[in-house]
Amino acid sequence: MSAEPALPAEGWRRTSPLSFLVGAVTSLRGALLPVAAALFTSRNWDWGLFLAVLVPAFCLIFFFRWLAWRRFRYRLGESDVRVERGLFNRTARSVPYERIQDVSLEQAFVPRLFGMVEVKFETGAGGRDEIAIRYVDAAEAEALREAVRAQKGGLVAALASEAAPPAEEQARTLFAMNPRRLMTFGLFEFSLVVFAVLGGVLQQFDFLLPFDIWDFEAWLGLLAGPGHRLSEFGLATQAIGAALALSVLGLLGLATGLGRTVLRDYGFRLEETPKGLRRRRGLLTRTDVVMPLHRVQALTLTTGIVRRRFGWHGLSVVSLAQDAKSESHVVVPFGTMEEIAPVVNTTGFALPGEATDWHPASRRQRNDSIALTVLPLVLIAGAVAGLGVVFGARIEGLPASWPLLAAGGLAALGGLLGVREWHLWRHRCHAIDARQLFVREGWLAPHLAIASRVKLQSVEIAQSPLARRRGYADVRFGVAGGKLEMHGVPLESARAIRAAVLDSIAAVDFSRLPG
Image (cartoon, rainbow, N blue to C red; front, top):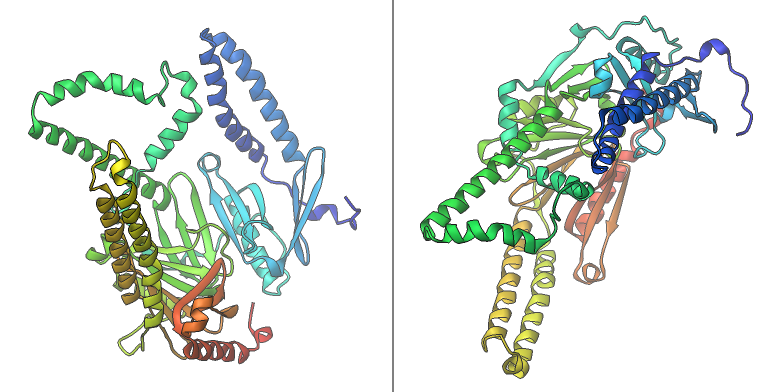
């Protein structure tokens, strides 16, 4: 590592002495299961042997965590945040204040037990250039966040550990979820992820089981007896048994969705503060994120197949501080439009009104999309029918009508996919006004994107070879974390939209904007 200018010793700070204890407990928790599994498979379970392995491992973990804590330090300089870490290979990293989009606070379950907070400096680079400080107490975490924001604002602010959090009376609650709303939200978050997790665990630790869980014939043997007995009760009883099995599956899905929702969104509160939108949520892992309003580029309004029938929607913001985490900026996870509208107004955006001039996608794009979806299946169906006429009678074990049945199934599938493409086109439209542009898509689970013309980063017109011949294009707008697209726009309209957005961006002198 190249030599760096010496910095004042009093400018460097260490994390809380409890941070190495938190790290040791977290590491030990991850080591317990493998150690227990190894001892269990030895078929000589002995608590003395278990402790003889665990205690030295615990001591080593504590020792190395203490060394890591001693070798970690951070400093808020005049122009950047600097962090030095490493036992044998020292690493020094720095992030200039102008690249820091926001500072978020996070409390996982174990650090929360000790009152510790993790401070993350978000750069909007998908996590590649982020710096995290683990762990400090809550007061110092708030002081770090305020000091960085003061530096970004051009002020000279020193870090003071005794600094108090921002006054709560300055915050105005925009949205909150009580336990009843949280439980209702959980019922709509049906999920069978528990089976995926269970399958992963069984795959990793299948050697602990007395039989091979992936042996299909063994499972058939285990179910042969009950299956024969069940068949004796008749079709009605078998149907009742299948319904009960599906009911149990549904209850597990509801319980899984409810559990995930409670863990993620417990105590959800969104507030308007002088610094922006402040969101706090989480049961085991508590997060505290502030999203500056001037960095919000776009909004996304979503709903689900079932929840839309009851009037429930979700609202997310697309911010310059957003990284690869898809749910990091959900501001209203489950609310009515009456509750969402004030949040939208606070961000400086506006929902589309009755006067909004919506434009559907090009009919040529619709026809091409349907043709490209249906024609391959129709051609394959024709080929199957032709081959069946030639070779059908020579294939043993299949009925003579199998070519027609296969061809009919493929043709029916093509028809269904064509109807789906038509419905998607019916619900795909866009609009643009003096300040914003709107993109609405989706059939069963529609979503609406609202973007500020001034805050877009780029505008691109994309055409496939077929689109060039047919005279339509996709208009792509650059936003943080991805692209916002208008599909199937007539070429002349696409060019007019690009010119209007670029004129809006060019009319603003961003060097004179605050922050």
